[in-house]
Image 1 (spheres, rainbow, N blue to C red):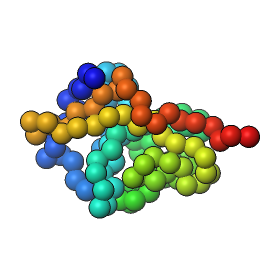
Image 2: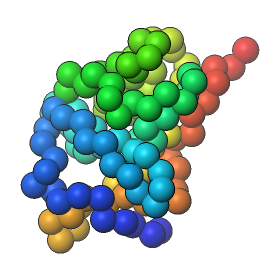
Image 3: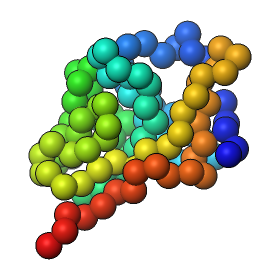
Image 4: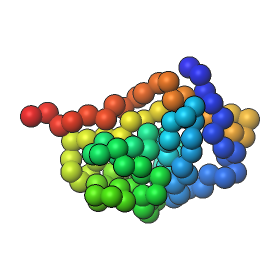
Length: 113
């Protein structure tokens, strides 16, 4: 795994969204209320609109373009169902938030027909 420093941990707060650029890839870090920070690809699986300006209320993330809704704890789509955000491994080391964009844990998937 090749982790890259993204930001200082002191810039990340529970209930917030932090947009970042890692190795030329736009990602978002969500720290859901009562959960752990998670790193996701910032491209909405619908039409690849950036979620960096999406509304995050500490639990759910809304796509700013077409209203898709995602669970901040696991990246799964709540509306419509059956989709997911790509998730990247995240760790905190030496006071820095680090992400490995070369590894994908959850691929954006189209629902089974």
